[in-house]
Image (tube, rainbow, N blue to C red):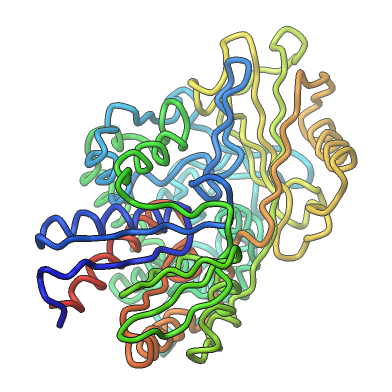
Length: 473
């Protein structure tokens, strides 16, 4: 046990949202316990924020990384309040509630009541043109089929096929849910991605009945800006959150633009060696690097087989700005998603200026197209001119857009999307138990572990702070 007068030297490896959240809550926890904290944030990138990257250009607010977060996940709302940013939150355009799914190269409106690809209103679902009559009947059989929960984990795709059938899984759920992970649903862990699906089967005997119940509970619990919207962001972009965290952490040291090359035990703590030769002494370490990078650092000290099992997928997004006078199209929704069976380069297209009114001048249009998934890593590697040509061909063929963009912004996010394999949660528990025994004071967290969304990473950062300080008592 360390004395109350000792200085807690903590190094955080990674300056993305997981690392910044860990730092913020470590600082809060130190203040609460009356402890003196020396905090150092290390990141090989020259700036903080990780994948969060808002570009302000010509009156546009352009997200080059993630563009929003789920309003129902409280961790990010709580953090925004703590940072004094609650008034900066903004919801999606209420007049752009429609979302479309492509089928046979035509856009079909998603039926009302669809939640994460699962119908919660049977009447509208039975009218959709996305599925055959057989596909619809197979889906509603879920209401009458006995629950047969798997004894352990199972694949997300396998579960959905079992409950609502292959058509719903492939034509609706996969393009919607795979957009979050860019993965193959038949290879992703149910428990690690959408545990509420399995909970629905166990508690209600039916996926559809469970999602109906969850929808009512979520609507009743929604407060403030989260009411009546699925997504939220900040009026001046997600970098608003990074700037506020940076300011709140003004007392923390930074080592930016330099890579951590080695971790080693040193006395009662650890030594963190940087690529420029500097060595940082630490009592505790928070590692928020991707799984493959974390494994390289930890492997000399502890077995990290579980981290090696996490595959990563690369994605890209292409943002195009247009003059409304030459665009020739009005949107009545927020965008569309594309099943892989359609054979396009794009996996989704957000009608950004329609979905988020703050992102564009009134006389302009902003589109954001997504490229790349677990079974298509080649599109992401295309040279800029060929990537833009492929995306423009897709939007010309699907929406008839022939206008010339005012400008285009391309972002490639290499090895950015962790794929949680079946058994992921149990594997991470095993890894953390081993770390606790063999490397006390070293905590791993972030998108590779327990959720890829911004609120998930923030929640994990808070948990890391509590865990590390509880260990000192």
